[in-house]
Length: 514
Image (tube, rainbow, N blue to C red; front, side, top):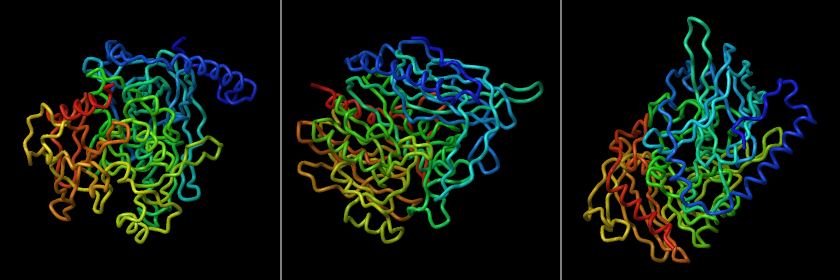
């Protein structure tokens, strides 16, 4: 299959019915062929992919955000879908102000000999327009209705992964160029050892584009059910920059680069058989049931209730679950369709997970009423969200003789500095066979102490569920090119740590064996 995207049409003709129907029919045929080819196990696919030449130049070099600090109107864009299969098409919507032509470079993120990415396709120069900032809708919804700038059909040979599209303006004489990203997942349907779920619901919940509009910024309060957010808008600069990461080179990439890329980079460095998916791909268990293990990574706070039930089914059918994350499964997050009828493009805070536990009851009392109350997340993850849920601390070993610590040489009470933060889990669930393998105190800048707990418990079919209890776990695995260590509450992780690496190897070895 050709690498070329579908021919770019004059914009006023792009959505004409007959031509669009032909394009979609062709894409559907290609997608069916790609899906048929993708049901065969290919355990060496990641090794083969990472043996290909990497790209030395994939990061953003010239980045500019406006006075509010959240968007880059000089060039910004978004994608029509969170994820896409090979053979399917995805639209990319781009705005420039002032109007400039631009170049689009598409990179797959991985290891690639340490470079961190591979250049898959360069498109352009492309024409653009200055698209309007949407008028806030009900519940402060900002939903862009921009014209499609380019439609890309994903080639059958593109490997599942997280893809960044780097947008670069073509500068006029005597002026500077500007850059930002778009981000999407290429998924597949093949059996794999590891399914890596990106936390894109949480990226979008915190996304403040265009000007401080997120799930947290409604005048009625920052924890209630007041705001809706749309995937039909650019990602601004990563929303945690004021207190966790200070890296403007993330503009347009959600929160993948600071919190999730270190895990993807490390997995691919070691040749693990990994496939990738969006939160929205887990509304049914089908994808996960074709994998041996499922990973939640980084800050995975916002889950549709269907995601919860799907991952419950994975566990009950023998899939191993690794929550290498913190503050996960905190809020029931119903998906809604966009105003144009596209499924799963709007999310909202529907209510807390936690059933009748104190944490959920307190959230309802202080910030409700909410339309939903989710089940006890601890009965799935092994440990729960607690209040306060944010702070920083050391990850302290409590069960050094457990198999997950084999080869690490750790001792009882040994600590891994700064690995807990900026949010975490605690309060272990009453599950037969559950063990607390790490525990300690997290502090909000030296005050408001809270106890965090890392847990592991046996699943019903010889599988297991591990909960690392920290957003920062991936920081102990690798530091890819351009990576900036996060910090919070006057505490920070120290970066790659041989103990975290060996623990994760031990967990994955057990998860994918047999």
